[in-house]
Amino acid sequence: MNLHKFNSPLKIAFLSFVLISNVFLSCSTVKHIHAEKPINTHNKKIYTQQKKIYDLEKMGIKLSNKFDGARLNNVTQVNDTMIAVSIYPENAPINNSAFYAFKIWSTNPKITYVQFKYSKKYSHRYIPKLKTSTTKFTPISNENVFFLDSIYTIKLNLTKEPLTVSAQEIITSTDTKNWYSKIISSNPNLVHYKTVGKSVLGRPIPMLDMYTGNPKNKDIVVLLSRQHPPEVSGFIAFQSFLETLLQNNELSKIFFSKYRVLVFPIVNPDGVDLGHWRHNANGIDLNRDWGFYRQPEVKAVTKTIVKTAKKSDGKVVLGIDFHSTQEDLYYTSGTMEGTTIPHFYDEWFSAIDATFPNYTPNEIREDSTQPVSKGWFLRYFKATAITYEIGDETPRSFVKAKAKVAAIEMMKILNEK
Image (tube, rainbow, N blue to C red; front, top):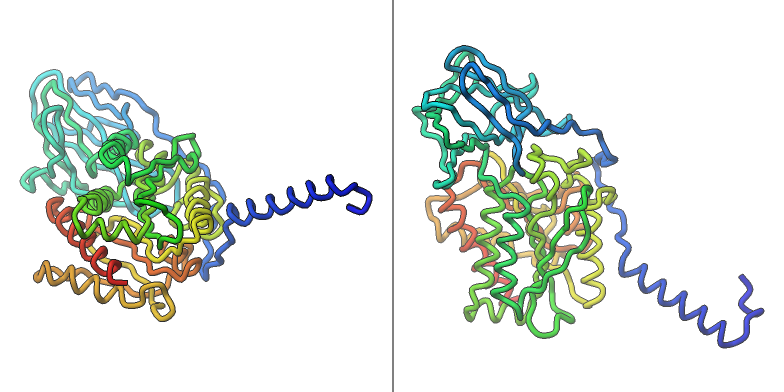
């Protein structure tokens, strides 16, 4: 295009448009991060469970998966006192995170045995949690767990009142919204809400932008959770961690005078509400897409982090991603020299361990070879990053207590930075 043909006002307007466009693009574009072990995060077909009430008329027993967070694919009668529930993943290949959740009740009070059946490649992982309309989720007692013909089987006392049987506590996207809405209303001058994008199925991706005063030039801490739907113990830790930051004591006041915290409480709301084992509604593990950003959830989160940092001239110094696995552990980065807080791991873990002297979880310190959030923070920002893993069955009281200490010690270290 030849600008010499334009008169001066038009030329100025055009150049202004180009300048503004370039600024906008520079703020909104996230560069690709190429991992050593690239993962195919193009969409993959998923197999949705049929939502229905399963009626075993001869036994007078009914089961239902007609609620958010449910996972139940089929029900069959084995004999007069036993039924089998079939649990399938949303697609494959997939990690063995065999999540299940269903309601069961009986016309008349009776003892019933329930067998869990999975595809050949998968096996039972989670200890069942039981809940009624008047009780909280409680792990089933060991005396009611059996292995019959190598099949995981539980004994239930059924009544007319529906009993919820679930691999982990059910915390849906609505439950999550109710929780963070209370946080927003209780901290109006500190917590600023924003929807940063939408999931595959149109559910909002929420962000809590936490800062006091002017956010300009403040270093940034990023917290995120629920990339993998069943990892509820990690989310419970995340809740306790965040609530500790908001205790409005002298420690937190100093912290928020220096830092800005971007919080993403539920990155995979579709997977959570669909009862998925691991993936989003496109059948993709979101924590393997932190490089090409093909999935809308990861694209929205990463774009927001990059854009926020550029717009405010803030430096992302720490990223913590909350997850669950079979045991408590920390995934950290092998690279420390030249990162934002090279001494953070040693100081943080030492302080946590000192509080719980009989508890020392494993730390796996190595740079990520796959496109996961921890590696993305390191490679994109040279930021210190942790995948904070909590055991599936770690007592919830300890999960909360440990997360509280972790938040306090993080603030202490960063306040001295």
